[in-house]
Amino acid sequence: MGSILIQNAKAIVTVDAEDRVLEQADLLIEGNQIVQIGKGLSPKDASTQIIDASNMFVYPGLINVHHHLYQTFTRNLPQVQKLELFDWLRYLYEIWKGLTPDAVYHSSLTGIADLMKNGCTTVFDHHYVFPEQHSAHFIDKQFEAADRLGMRFVASRGSMTLGKDHGGLPPMSVVQDIQTILTDSERLIDLYHDARAGSMRQVVLAPCSPFSVSADILRESAALARARDVRLHTHLAETKNEEAYTLERFGMRPLAYMESLGWLGSDVWYAHGIHFNDDEMKLLAQTKTGVAHCPISNMKLSSGIARVPEMLEMGIPVGLAVDGSASNDGSNLLEELRIAYLLHRLQSSALAPTGYDLLKVATRGGAEILGRSDIGSLEVGKSADLFMVRIDQIDAVGTHTDAKSWLGTVGLKRAVDYTVVNGRIVVEKGILTGADEGRLYEDCQASYQRFIQQ
Image (cartoon, rainbow, N blue to C red; front, side, top):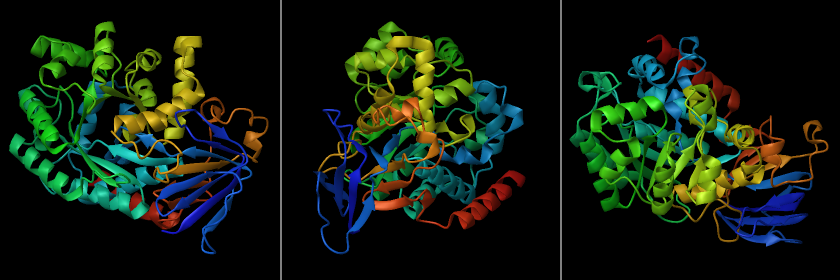
């Protein structure tokens, strides 16, 4: 990696602790780090790539804290468009039980490419579907896809242990025993987890949900994660059906059940977190247990609206996420940001977070959720993760007043112009640099056809 000088930017929205916006400013990258931000900066040497940003806003890379990349191959299905979560899952599990290494690799490429073209530089993926055949290296295939395109990737070793025969939702063919799960979890941590600053690969342990795993795997996963210093994640409080399930089966609400198993703390975050009551919100705040906010998925599946304005006010860690491609039909965190802004304005009026508040959720908030201080803002010494948007376009006329809130209030309906991950330009002039997009489309579409027709 060489040097990149972003020169004379219309605005650099740093999202630092002082919420600084620098106008007509420069940003110098050397290797994988930001080394200078200011005015009148000079190239390191003749090899420095210079980008004229005089017509651009520059932002920290977005951090997606909950996704299911494999679901990219089950989007836009008419059979599920009117279903809510439990029925939606029951239908789709019958398709997902046929996942193959080829499908996992190409669906990951598809989703990662979409994320990158829309300003995302770090993605956490929650993979928990492991069919009996050919699934031993699914997570390895995901890391391979992320490496190919240059995405900063946090993978999960998800799991399901409670199938239909034992009161769960998934078919028995995707249920695994605890020892298999724990053994593979250790393998993946040993092979991929890099805790150093600037890491491109990390691993999280993530049993799927209270209605698809046993208490034993939740307890054992927490013990292993803390012994190996990795983080914990699962779905929680997504629907009223889940609440009814845990009350009937365990005599507890979902959060109380997870608390009984050791699943609270700053190393834990939950996807969705819609149906928490007041006392539960206080407990999340006290323990710094985080929430991945998935507004589009929550809307599509009629799950509800998370209490994000209150969460932010209370200091609960909140990150932004697209959730599964099949409950979103896209992998665009910029779209998620604007929808979140509009949704909470509708629900909470003046108490709603601003467009800039939600940019902070999608950057600094995501970094906190993942336990990282090396990403999430544009500051000297941090990893060089950012994206840039041209504003000399017809869709941006009359919108230059507030660069901080622009992504929430105006929003972007086209690909970003540049995405930089770890000092490498991965999107240039709206086009991926790590793959021929036409060929990538053909390969991924062919893989989709193989999967869906099997």
